[in-house]
Length: 436
Image 1 (tube, one colour):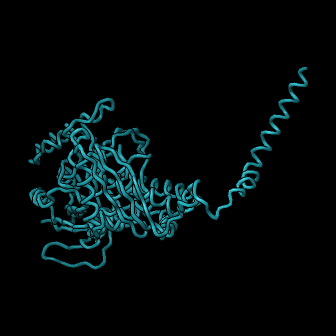
Image 2 (spheres, helix red, strand yellow):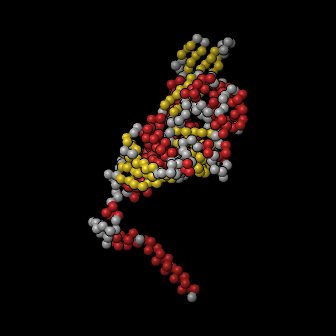
Image 3 (tube, one colour):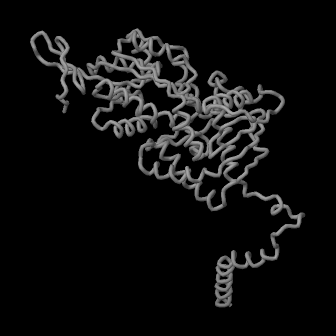
């Protein structure tokens, strides 16, 4: 149902909160949809503009959100206008992306299935949020994205958009049209849409937190990724022959300085992307379990994310008790699954955020790392909140730790284990006696 309140008349048209009513020559009212489209400037979303215009009879407003893709996003706006969009918005959200999305992920040690720092995942709820803001501003009737029916992003966009804007349609036309990539390229050519060489070879998604590469030769999981798939990292064999040491300073669980130099959040990640990438650190190639049940070969470049997350986990172990560390591992696993599975706006994630933020109050200190030929190693750490005492850990130095107490501790610690095995041994003996 359309809202017919707050009508404003413009000559022969009536603009509404949720769409446009056009008056035909016969006086008949024709409703035209107005969609806000998440637009990257790439093949899929460029084709979507024409598809929405022709199949939905819709006016299209495109939104490009800069999350640090390291691309010329100005050309995306120019391309959208040439394709006949009603309006185009270019939103610089890099700082917001780092502080409101990447920082929480760092605190949660967010790595999916032990390898992927959820770089693509994190940008989706932010893009959805910006789409909804523009839709409200422009009185759009719907929101559209270019996700296929095979991936995770459709889940992330659908759930976030419908949660933030329950009164608007959410469309995923790529799920409808069923075109192969080759068919999509041919369709683009018939509509005068430029198709780049990269688009023919790979599907790329990037943010300041990482770069994802899919399609083409990468779909053969038995083959090594081609050299041209990578842009942010050098091949380990081509990295410098001398290691480089990097010290990251943390305050309250987030990085604030590199090698003693304070930086803005964005500058810090950009610096570590370049430094780690130069040494071939951050290449990820793994088989990933998508939410929709498909196993997928995924290739990523996440130099800064790889370094920062490794340093953060190490510092936590120095300042947290064993009980905190073990319990937080469970919380982190649930947090990263919720984020990966498109449930960024679920109340459980907010609950977990509360615990995680409290746990980070003492995560302050420095971690020193060694980067060399694609390898990453923590080689030192210090913190004013450290629970590590070298006097207690050193067997050769006299301390206040009374070693004789250990005997009583062991007696109690292993009591139930010994009881179980004693009973097991007794039962075995009884069975043997019965046989004889």
